Length: 163
Ligand SMILES: [Ca+2]
Image 1 (cartoon, protein in one colour):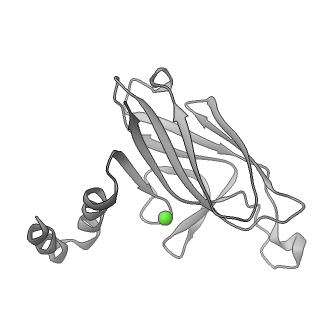
Image 2: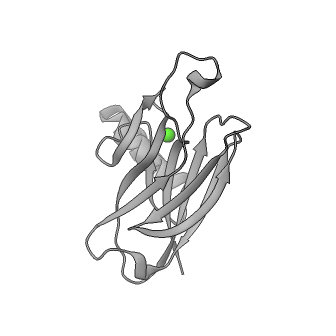
Image 3: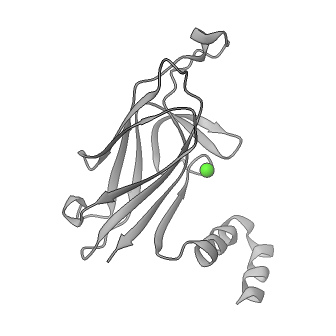
């Protein structure tokens, strides 16, 4: 198996790096979305990619997930980063297909959030829409030249099936 993977890396590095991710650390994970890296097909209304790694959200940003399995509830795992001023933490609301599924406060620390989504909330076509809403902050209000309205940074999203 390892030989096969190594061979394919020479042919097409991006595709095979993804395959290795699936084999080595995903376990029950059914889908992995790397935000900030070749993500244009599924992110909507976010700031530009940074360092091939993350994107800042806006006040309302979306990720379209290609997934449908009728039988099982799912967990959405989201890795978030990004500075927030002490006087303006992010009040984050997460919607799955327009249904509110999580609501929390994010400060400057990294956060890995696990969100339970019952199967009744899943769309019957292949597209599921994850919406992230938050209050934003402007670095230019704190001495920077950056006048963007920033929410939270997204690094990746995973879908895991629940038995
Ligand atoms: Ca990423």
